[in-house]
Length: 199
Image 1 (cartoon, rainbow, N blue to C red):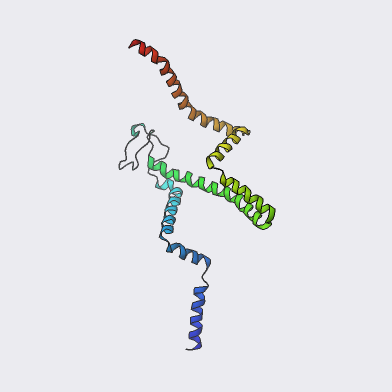
Image 2 (cartoon, one colour):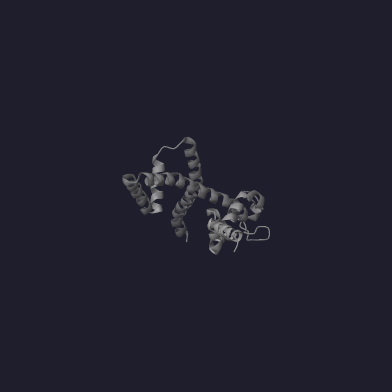
């Protein structure tokens, strides 16, 4: 073999062994069908959220009393809800809220977890052990108990006025139907002996 042929073979072998990390990661990703399917679903979900105003057939908050609780039709693929809003439009716009909630939670977790992990890894020793034990304790607590504790802490701490007003308005909206139901139940309870007396 000539020297030029040997150099060409050596160069081809070097190109295969010096594959970039990005190319290697993509090659491994596309070998797994489940990962590709997941990537397609997540990409579709992100595109749905970003293009919601262009894709959605109706306004997500527009009500129509003539369309209350209609079954799926050609015009309303998922049907309508109790206020006559198109459920498909609400699902499409709901993708934005879901992605935003996930993005915010991941950002908060990364902004706390990455610096703590770097600190624990860099300092080692006592700092590493302390951060590891705190992390273990947090992971050992069930999420529901932690959420209840955070809710109690939020009530104990003074909140800004605008936040308190918004929370009060939200609670008022939720409490109004509850209070109405309780009132109706008590009224029916008082009317029950009178109804029995008439029977």
